[in-house]
View 1 (cartoon, one colour):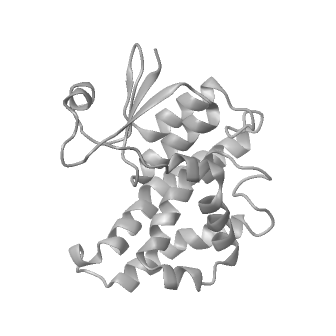
View 2: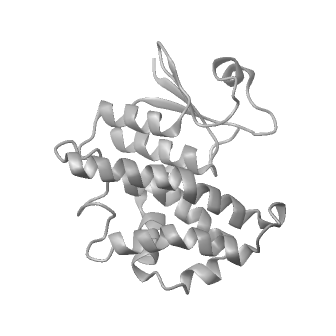
Length: 202
């Protein structure tokens, strides 16, 4: 019996989980969740009530990174996990931790600046740019963040950079980050992303 993924199309955490699952070829049925009417079955299995949630035969995974790692453990044909590169694995973990920590906070403040009147939206954006500059530097001599091919880092970070971009697209596409812009554009046009964003009925 296939595993069951509770997802929400526009959630960046769910996006990266869906992409890892699709890449791995794992057999998973996806249920699109209405955030205003969350399925009782999902809440029974994961009372925290946030997506993504992956229901397996013997346990439940409630964090997107755990779901991604589970998927890659099934199959990782292009070595997203950088199995033979311990230094790359450390850098990968550090990059994702910074994305999910400081950058996610800066992104939320930038996106919902009206809720956080301590600073202006431009000031919150400037805080987020610290991470954008780091990514721009990583992309200086290659098309992907850590090596010459897509890895877990690219897939885990791209949905959040996408969200940062969409707060003010005019600003982003004219910002001084051409390498990052090209990286995000490739991601948004990739079959991996487009297929993961196919609409499902709730």
